[in-house]
Length: 234
Image 1 (cartoon, rainbow, N blue to C red):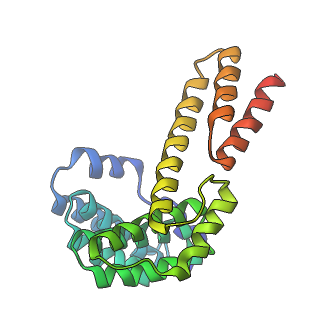
Image 2 (cartoon, rainbow, N blue to C red):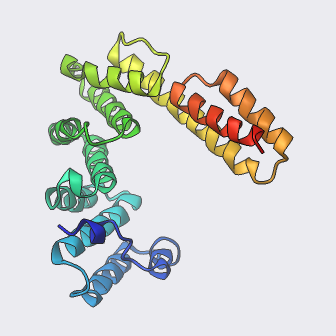
């Protein structure tokens, strides 16, 4: 597997705009993807083209909420590569396999992909592992099954690495709380950084000071604190 090729955006920006803005019907989008892949045969390795093609088609079906079709193509993506080849692409395809099968009530299939996600937890980052845990919690809630205690250390590792204030007691409740908190503070940080370009230095310092005082997650708090130090040194 040529990892450099795999991590490259091979689809032109113009094509992506057509796919997700200008072209309304699914079949036309898929035809355009296939035509482009055929056009670049010989430029990229065959295994790379297969993954790129199947991943793009899977997302087209996913966005149109045709989950059964998207699952078929995401399966090809995951089964055609190793997680080490391109962890973020592998993670997203795997996560959507979990979610898609859960949406269709294919709980046994979803459990299969959850197991693979947890096997890869050492390669995924804590935020990705938290997303997978949250989808696992959704799966258990809908299927009526019980949380397996063997996954408790993964929750604790995320608490420790990111500095969450949660205490690991009931796993489902803990996961839900962590996910909600992570989304909130990540969004607040993103909004603050977006506004910083248009705000005065004084206002930015005040915003980062308030964030570091109130943020409940150590990782985000430390990130904001480092940014605050840089602002004060200007």
